[in-house]
Length: 321
Image (cartoon, rainbow, N blue to C red; front, side):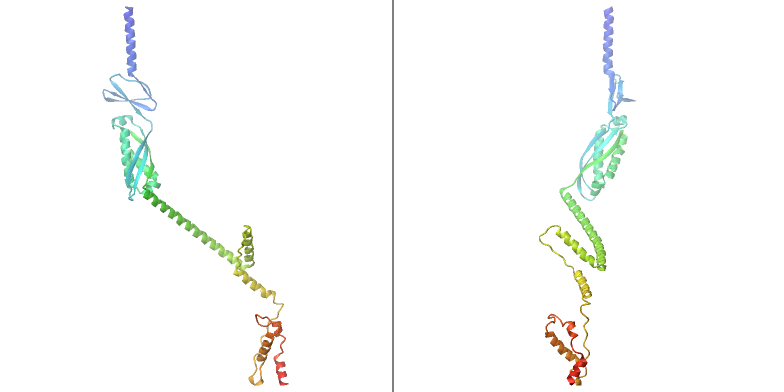
Protein backbone atom coordinates (compact mmCIF):
# COMPACT_ATOMS: atom_id res chain seq x y z
CA UNK A 1 0.00 0.00 0.00
CA UNK A 2 2.80 2.33 0.92
CA UNK A 3 4.65 1.50 -2.24
CA UNK A 4 1.60 2.31 -4.33
CA UNK A 5 1.22 5.61 -2.52
CA UNK A 6 4.87 6.51 -3.12
CA UNK A 7 4.53 5.55 -6.74
CA UNK A 8 1.46 7.77 -7.13
CA UNK A 9 3.20 10.70 -5.44
CA UNK A 10 6.25 10.23 -7.61
CA UNK A 11 4.12 10.09 -10.74
CA UNK A 12 2.24 13.23 -9.69
CA UNK A 13 5.50 15.01 -9.04
CA UNK A 14 6.86 14.00 -12.41
CA UNK A 15 3.63 15.11 -14.08
CA UNK A 16 3.71 18.45 -12.28
CA UNK A 17 7.31 18.94 -13.31
CA UNK A 18 6.49 18.14 -16.90
CA UNK A 19 3.50 20.47 -16.77
CA UNK A 20 5.54 23.34 -15.29
CA UNK A 21 8.25 22.74 -17.87
CA UNK A 22 5.71 23.00 -20.65
CA UNK A 23 3.85 25.96 -19.13
CA UNK A 24 6.74 28.08 -17.84
CA UNK A 25 8.06 30.88 -20.05
CA UNK A 26 10.63 33.65 -19.55
CA UNK A 27 10.18 37.03 -21.20
CA UNK A 28 13.34 39.12 -21.46
CA UNK A 29 13.56 42.75 -20.44
CA UNK A 30 13.47 44.10 -24.02
CA UNK A 31 10.58 41.83 -25.04
CA UNK A 32 6.84 41.66 -24.53
CA UNK A 33 4.74 38.48 -24.62
CA UNK A 34 1.48 37.96 -26.53
CA UNK A 35 -0.64 34.93 -25.62
CA UNK A 36 -2.86 33.29 -28.23
CA UNK A 37 -5.45 30.92 -26.74
CA UNK A 38 -7.06 28.74 -29.33
CA UNK A 39 -5.84 31.23 -31.93
CA UNK A 40 -7.36 34.28 -30.27
CA UNK A 41 -5.20 37.05 -28.83
CA UNK A 42 -5.55 37.58 -25.11
CA UNK A 43 -5.80 41.20 -24.05
CA UNK A 44 -3.18 40.80 -21.38
CA UNK A 45 0.38 41.49 -22.58
CA UNK A 46 2.91 39.54 -20.55
CA UNK A 47 5.59 41.80 -19.01
CA UNK A 48 9.27 40.86 -18.74
CA UNK A 49 10.04 38.07 -16.29
CA UNK A 50 8.67 34.63 -15.49
CA UNK A 51 5.19 33.78 -16.82
CA UNK A 52 3.05 30.69 -17.16
CA UNK A 53 0.75 29.63 -19.99
CA UNK A 54 -1.56 26.70 -20.45
CA UNK A 55 0.28 24.01 -22.39
CA UNK A 56 -1.17 22.87 -25.69
CA UNK A 57 -3.90 25.50 -25.40
CA UNK A 58 -1.87 28.72 -25.33
CA UNK A 59 0.88 29.94 -27.65
CA UNK A 60 3.27 32.66 -26.50
CA UNK A 61 4.65 35.11 -29.12
CA UNK A 62 7.53 37.34 -28.05
CA UNK A 63 7.96 40.77 -29.67
CA UNK A 64 11.26 42.65 -29.60
CA UNK A 65 10.83 46.25 -28.43
CA UNK A 66 14.37 47.40 -29.24
CA UNK A 67 15.19 49.99 -31.91
CA UNK A 68 15.80 48.19 -35.18
CA UNK A 69 18.40 49.44 -37.68
CA UNK A 70 17.11 48.66 -41.16
CA UNK A 71 19.36 49.47 -44.15
CA UNK A 72 17.50 50.54 -47.27
CA UNK A 73 19.01 49.19 -50.51
CA UNK A 74 20.31 51.76 -52.98
CA UNK A 75 17.54 53.10 -55.15
CA UNK A 76 18.20 54.55 -58.61
CA UNK A 77 16.04 57.39 -59.80
CA UNK A 78 15.89 60.59 -61.81
CA UNK A 79 15.80 63.88 -59.96
CA UNK A 80 13.57 66.79 -60.83
CA UNK A 81 16.40 68.39 -62.84
CA UNK A 82 16.87 65.17 -64.90
CA UNK A 83 19.98 63.75 -63.23
CA UNK A 84 20.27 60.00 -62.65
CA UNK A 85 21.42 59.20 -59.10
CA UNK A 86 21.63 56.23 -56.75
CA UNK A 87 20.66 56.90 -53.14
CA UNK A 88 20.75 54.58 -50.16
CA UNK A 89 19.47 55.23 -46.65
CA UNK A 90 19.00 53.70 -43.22
CA UNK A 91 15.83 53.59 -41.12
CA UNK A 92 15.66 53.41 -37.32
CA UNK A 93 12.31 52.20 -35.92
CA UNK A 94 10.84 50.38 -32.96
CA UNK A 95 7.63 48.58 -32.03
CA UNK A 96 5.37 50.56 -29.71
CA UNK A 97 2.24 48.37 -29.97
CA UNK A 98 3.08 44.65 -29.96
CA UNK A 99 -0.48 43.57 -30.67
CA UNK A 100 -0.79 45.59 -33.89
CA UNK A 101 2.75 44.68 -34.96
CA UNK A 102 1.80 41.00 -34.88
CA UNK A 103 -1.87 41.11 -35.86
CA UNK A 104 -2.19 44.10 -38.22
CA UNK A 105 0.71 43.19 -40.54
CA UNK A 106 2.22 39.89 -41.52
CA UNK A 107 5.89 40.94 -41.26
CA UNK A 108 6.41 44.45 -39.97
CA UNK A 109 10.15 44.45 -40.81
CA UNK A 110 9.52 43.59 -44.45
CA UNK A 111 6.65 46.10 -44.61
CA UNK A 112 8.82 48.93 -43.24
CA UNK A 113 11.63 48.00 -45.65
CA UNK A 114 9.38 48.12 -48.70
CA UNK A 115 7.75 51.36 -47.59
CA UNK A 116 11.19 52.93 -47.07
CA UNK A 117 12.33 51.97 -50.58
CA UNK A 118 9.16 53.35 -52.15
CA UNK A 119 9.38 56.60 -50.19
CA UNK A 120 13.05 56.99 -51.07
CA UNK A 121 12.34 56.73 -54.80
CA UNK A 122 9.53 59.24 -54.41
CA UNK A 123 11.83 61.69 -52.60
CA UNK A 124 14.43 61.36 -55.36
CA UNK A 125 11.89 62.26 -58.04
CA UNK A 126 10.62 65.30 -56.12
CA UNK A 127 14.03 66.78 -55.25
CA UNK A 128 16.79 68.54 -57.14
CA UNK A 129 20.37 67.35 -57.19
CA UNK A 130 21.51 70.29 -55.07
CA UNK A 131 18.95 69.38 -52.40
CA UNK A 132 20.17 65.78 -52.30
CA UNK A 133 23.75 66.96 -51.83
CA UNK A 134 23.39 69.92 -49.48
CA UNK A 135 19.89 69.93 -47.95
CA UNK A 136 19.68 66.40 -46.60
CA UNK A 137 18.20 67.36 -43.25
CA UNK A 138 14.95 68.52 -44.83
CA UNK A 139 14.85 65.44 -47.07
CA UNK A 140 15.37 63.18 -44.05
CA UNK A 141 12.42 64.78 -42.30
CA UNK A 142 10.21 64.40 -45.37
CA UNK A 143 11.27 60.77 -45.81
CA UNK A 144 10.58 60.05 -42.14
CA UNK A 145 7.11 61.53 -42.43
CA UNK A 146 6.30 59.48 -45.54
CA UNK A 147 7.32 56.21 -43.85
CA UNK A 148 5.78 56.98 -40.47
CA UNK A 149 2.30 57.71 -41.80
CA UNK A 150 1.37 54.09 -42.71
CA UNK A 151 3.61 52.58 -40.03
CA UNK A 152 1.47 54.05 -37.23
CA UNK A 153 -1.29 51.52 -37.97
CA UNK A 154 1.26 48.71 -37.79
CA UNK A 155 2.24 49.53 -34.22
CA UNK A 156 5.65 50.73 -35.42
CA UNK A 157 7.20 54.13 -34.74
CA UNK A 158 9.86 55.52 -37.10
CA UNK A 159 12.56 56.98 -34.91
CA UNK A 160 14.90 58.42 -37.57
CA UNK A 161 15.69 58.18 -41.30
CA UNK A 162 19.09 59.12 -42.73
CA UNK A 163 20.29 59.30 -46.34
CA UNK A 164 23.71 57.69 -46.33
CA UNK A 165 25.17 58.22 -49.77
CA UNK A 166 24.32 59.77 -53.12
CA UNK A 167 26.14 58.21 -56.09
CA UNK A 168 26.52 60.35 -59.22
CA UNK A 169 27.62 59.42 -62.76
CA UNK A 170 31.24 60.13 -63.65
CA UNK A 171 30.28 62.75 -66.23
CA UNK A 172 28.25 64.63 -63.64
CA UNK A 173 31.15 64.47 -61.18
CA UNK A 174 33.49 66.01 -63.76
CA UNK A 175 30.96 68.72 -64.59
CA UNK A 176 30.53 69.59 -60.92
CA UNK A 177 34.30 69.68 -60.47
CA UNK A 178 34.66 72.14 -63.36
CA UNK A 179 31.84 74.24 -61.95
CA UNK A 180 33.45 74.35 -58.52
CA UNK A 181 36.83 75.22 -60.04
CA UNK A 182 35.30 78.05 -62.07
CA UNK A 183 33.52 79.39 -58.99
CA UNK A 184 36.73 79.35 -56.96
CA UNK A 185 38.59 81.11 -59.77
CA UNK A 186 35.86 83.75 -59.95
CA UNK A 187 36.08 84.40 -56.23
CA UNK A 188 39.88 84.57 -56.43
CA UNK A 189 39.68 87.18 -59.19
CA UNK A 190 37.17 89.22 -57.23
CA UNK A 191 39.42 89.12 -54.17
CA UNK A 192 42.45 90.15 -56.24
CA UNK A 193 40.51 93.01 -57.84
CA UNK A 194 39.35 94.19 -54.42
CA UNK A 195 42.93 94.06 -53.16
CA UNK A 196 44.12 96.07 -56.18
CA UNK A 197 41.42 98.67 -55.53
CA UNK A 198 42.39 99.06 -51.90
CA UNK A 199 46.08 99.18 -52.82
CA UNK A 200 45.40 101.88 -55.44
CA UNK A 201 43.65 104.03 -52.83
CA UNK A 202 46.60 103.66 -50.46
CA UNK A 203 49.11 104.37 -53.25
CA UNK A 204 47.17 107.48 -54.23
CA UNK A 205 47.31 108.71 -50.63
CA UNK A 206 51.04 107.93 -50.49
CA UNK A 207 51.65 109.77 -53.78
CA UNK A 208 49.79 112.80 -52.44
CA UNK A 209 51.95 112.86 -49.33
CA UNK A 210 55.15 112.44 -51.37
CA UNK A 211 54.12 115.27 -53.69
CA UNK A 212 53.91 117.57 -50.69
CA UNK A 213 57.24 116.33 -49.30
CA UNK A 214 59.57 115.34 -52.20
CA UNK A 215 62.27 114.22 -49.78
CA UNK A 216 60.02 111.30 -48.80
CA UNK A 217 60.45 109.85 -52.30
CA UNK A 218 64.20 109.81 -51.90
CA UNK A 219 63.90 108.14 -48.50
CA UNK A 220 61.61 105.55 -49.98
CA UNK A 221 64.18 104.89 -52.71
CA UNK A 222 66.87 104.35 -50.09
CA UNK A 223 64.64 101.90 -48.23
CA UNK A 224 64.11 100.00 -51.49
CA UNK A 225 67.86 99.80 -52.04
CA UNK A 226 68.37 98.47 -48.53
CA UNK A 227 65.67 95.82 -49.02
CA UNK A 228 67.19 94.67 -52.34
CA UNK A 229 70.73 94.67 -50.97
CA UNK A 230 69.68 92.38 -48.10
CA UNK A 231 69.18 89.52 -50.57
CA UNK A 232 72.89 89.64 -51.54
CA UNK A 233 72.32 89.60 -55.26
CA UNK A 234 75.18 90.09 -57.68
CA UNK A 235 73.11 92.40 -59.86
CA UNK A 236 71.29 95.41 -58.44
CA UNK A 237 68.60 97.08 -60.49
CA UNK A 238 68.17 100.61 -59.19
CA UNK A 239 65.03 102.49 -60.24
CA UNK A 240 65.58 106.22 -60.70
CA UNK A 241 62.26 108.07 -60.62
CA UNK A 242 61.65 111.11 -62.75
CA UNK A 243 60.28 112.98 -59.73
CA UNK A 244 63.74 112.89 -58.18
CA UNK A 245 65.20 114.63 -61.25
CA UNK A 246 62.55 117.30 -61.03
CA UNK A 247 63.35 117.78 -57.36
CA UNK A 248 67.04 118.25 -58.21
CA UNK A 249 66.16 120.72 -61.01
CA UNK A 250 64.20 122.85 -58.56
CA UNK A 251 67.02 122.82 -56.01
CA UNK A 252 69.93 123.72 -58.42
CA UNK A 253 68.91 127.39 -59.28
CA UNK A 254 68.51 128.14 -55.61
CA UNK A 255 72.06 126.96 -54.90
CA UNK A 256 73.74 129.00 -57.77
CA UNK A 257 71.74 132.22 -57.45
CA UNK A 258 74.51 134.09 -55.56
CA UNK A 259 77.37 133.01 -57.85
CA UNK A 260 76.21 134.57 -61.16
CA UNK A 261 74.08 137.73 -61.58
CA UNK A 262 71.14 137.84 -63.92
CA UNK A 263 71.88 138.34 -67.62
CA UNK A 264 71.12 141.79 -69.04
CA UNK A 265 69.18 142.15 -72.26
CA UNK A 266 70.71 144.45 -75.00
CA UNK A 267 69.05 147.82 -75.71
CA UNK A 268 66.90 148.20 -78.83
CA UNK A 269 68.67 149.18 -82.05
CA UNK A 270 68.83 152.90 -83.15
CA UNK A 271 67.94 154.43 -86.54
CA UNK A 272 69.68 153.09 -89.65
CA UNK A 273 71.07 156.59 -90.63
CA UNK A 274 73.24 156.79 -87.49
CA UNK A 275 75.33 153.85 -88.52
CA UNK A 276 75.45 150.48 -86.95
CA UNK A 277 73.29 150.44 -83.88
CA UNK A 278 74.07 148.99 -80.52
CA UNK A 279 72.34 145.77 -81.41
CA UNK A 280 74.74 145.14 -84.26
CA UNK A 281 77.75 146.05 -82.15
CA UNK A 282 76.50 143.89 -79.36
CA UNK A 283 76.04 141.08 -81.83
CA UNK A 284 79.58 141.54 -83.20
CA UNK A 285 80.97 141.68 -79.73
CA UNK A 286 78.96 138.64 -78.85
CA UNK A 287 80.42 136.77 -81.83
CA UNK A 288 83.89 137.86 -80.85
CA UNK A 289 83.34 136.89 -77.29
CA UNK A 290 81.87 133.58 -78.38
CA UNK A 291 85.26 132.63 -79.85
CA UNK A 292 87.18 133.93 -76.89
CA UNK A 293 88.54 131.50 -74.38
CA UNK A 294 86.51 131.04 -71.26
CA UNK A 295 83.15 130.73 -73.08
CA UNK A 296 80.93 127.68 -72.82
CA UNK A 297 81.26 125.53 -75.95
CA UNK A 298 77.85 123.96 -75.46
CA UNK A 299 75.81 127.09 -74.73
CA UNK A 300 75.68 130.89 -74.91
CA UNK A 301 78.49 133.03 -73.46
CA UNK A 302 78.75 133.37 -69.76
CA UNK A 303 76.87 136.21 -68.16
CA UNK A 304 80.06 137.66 -66.61
CA UNK A 305 81.68 138.22 -70.04
CA UNK A 306 78.62 140.06 -71.36
CA UNK A 307 78.98 142.66 -68.62
CA UNK A 308 82.54 143.61 -69.87
CA UNK A 309 81.24 144.82 -73.30
CA UNK A 310 81.22 148.66 -73.81
CA UNK A 311 78.01 150.56 -73.38
CA UNK A 312 76.11 151.72 -76.51
CA UNK A 313 76.87 155.43 -75.92
CA UNK A 314 80.62 154.77 -75.69
CA UNK A 315 80.51 152.81 -78.97
CA UNK A 316 78.79 155.65 -80.88
CA UNK A 317 81.29 158.25 -79.51
CA UNK A 318 84.23 156.20 -80.68
CA UNK A 319 82.77 155.88 -84.17
CA UNK A 320 82.34 159.73 -84.49
CA UNK A 321 85.99 160.27 -83.46
